[in-house]
Amino acid sequence: MTVSARSDRGLTFSAKLHTAANTDPARPVIELRRGGRALAGSYLYEGDGLITGWHSHEVHQIEYALHGVVEVETDAGHYLLPPQQAAWIPAGLEHQAVMNPDVKTVAVMFDAQMIPDTGLRARIIAVSPLIREMMIYALRWPIDRAQSPTEDAGVSDDFFRTMAHLVTEALDHEAPLSLPTSDHPIVAAALAYTKEHLASVTAEDVSRAVAVSERTLRRLFSDTLGLSWRTYLLHARMLRAMALLAAPGQSVQATSSAVGFDNLSSFTRSFTQFCGETPSAYRKRVAGEKA
Image (cartoon, rainbow, N blue to C red; front, side, top):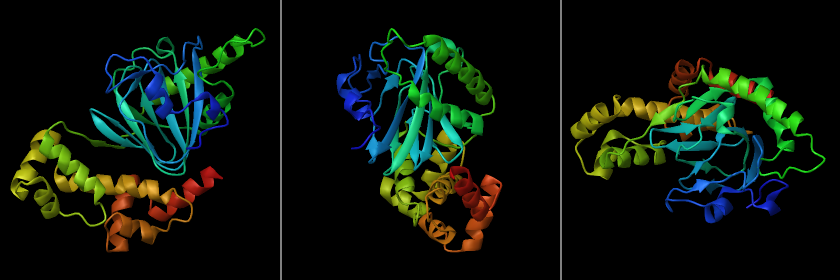
């Protein structure tokens, strides 16, 4: 695994999961500050695919994928980070992250007192160009840094307080880019099977995989999630398409096939209705903003 230039200091989730003090071995509390006193700080992850496992933090976190795909799961929802979107994970919220191969993410953490009363739920928020550049600039102040005698803590604290105000404003305009989860065993299995087979899945396939009738499957989705299986499938396909189109060299045609559309015009119509722009326009915009 490759992490940032500071990898020798162990700033990876996999290392943290073995060293953090915790009360629940299955869902440990990760002490990202490692005993430090910083009000806020950052970390950079880049490298191979990684599933962090379930955990929580003692600090608030906002995570943004500079490139690649990141997925965040909580007990309440499954979130995918397309370009220009970041995941807000409040202190104490149990979650796990899936870092897909070749991902590069930057995260900024805040002491809970800096952004109070955010509610104990994850959110997807829009990342303005200003917040994005501030997140990158924040990498000079790692979250686990020790306070040196020569460091001007006031500079970093003022920087992060300003950023905290911007993040607080962004939280008022969250983006509904998430998929529901369920603790119902049959529904949970159906959700997982659907996500794993987006290119070709049918209701019949899912019903067979979870050993219920299609009628029962439809009823369970309606009763437990408040939406149909077909609606869930469409949303899962659109979120996956957004992630795929953000990858360099990914064509609209290949994306359409990868998420289960045989007809390119049908995919374009569905994507445009979901995202407010065509797949080609979305891909061009994302490529331009990355540049």
